[in-house]
Image (cartoon, rainbow over all chains, first blue to last red; front, side):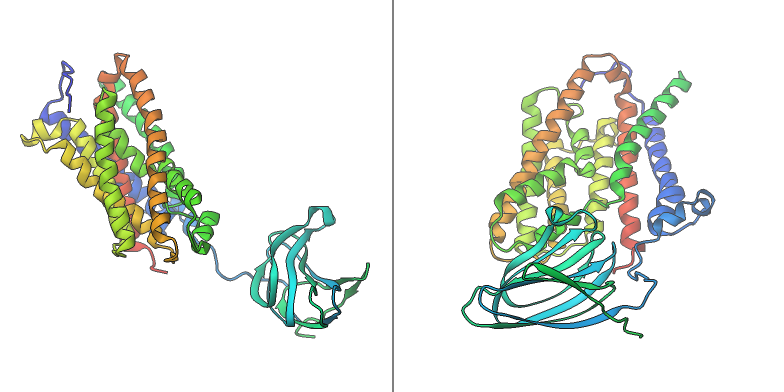
Length: 188
Length: 235
């Protein structure tokens, strides 16, 4: 490597002192700040003193909810080229698990409309053709979340949806109209 | 004199801290939406993997700090290209072999070595080997060997995912090409800044202090990764 004579090259003593300073400073930061903030270890008590220990509490895998969850089973019969939409009203960060099974392949589009913004703001999560779909869903925003199903075959199709989750109620959109569906809490 | 040297050290340290800390929170792995993309991809996805490789390098302060150390005293673009090529060959070998042969190495352990590679480079730049230990290890060999470790680090990041064997080779090569692109982008910026700084007297006056700060950053990264290795719950 091309070396440049700096005129005042560091003495061995300076190099040792600098290296020791580098090590000590790094360890100081590690023990006073990083260990409490990142790993919840507080060997010197600085984490508690500076409030850094609070940062190390990871995300709790449990999400408490104020009300009991609801459970729903619903069936739709679609004639050829008929479609239906079924959506749950869900708050931000609430979850549900679901499985739907159709007697024949249907087109589906799992999507959502943010509350108050109407169909123009709709977001599609997943679409395609299938006879079934199973999954878990975590609402990324408050709004109505659910499915559009369309029978593109030549035979009548039955679709049955099972779900459990922290939704408020459901809305059915069919034949140009819509109606709400009350769903009882699991504890009622 | 003593006072101003201390100020310089503190200033440079705070600069490095500002660079290093935001990244530490993410422990520098592939995360979020990028992670779900990698998990879900089944088949060749050349440009997305290239992008991820470049992103990993540009946002990878550990690789970048090492490269700053490597080119700190390289004045000629020709030398920069030489050293960076050696580094690139080194990390390409272990990235490809690591993922394809499924070599399992603890990521924190490798990242700790990457941190120590920064310490090594800074110590070399401080003339420590020549003046203190009386010998000079071959700098080209050192850069190549550390390239091997950095590549293993990259491989462990990709192995955290359940990579589909479908299109794996193309995706790994794309990731590697992306890493080189990101490296060229980041290095050009660093080289330009260093070149500007070199035209001033302050460069040589502060070179020693800057490398001390670089060494501190290396010790910090190594300490952070070793803490994770021993303290982090495996889940």
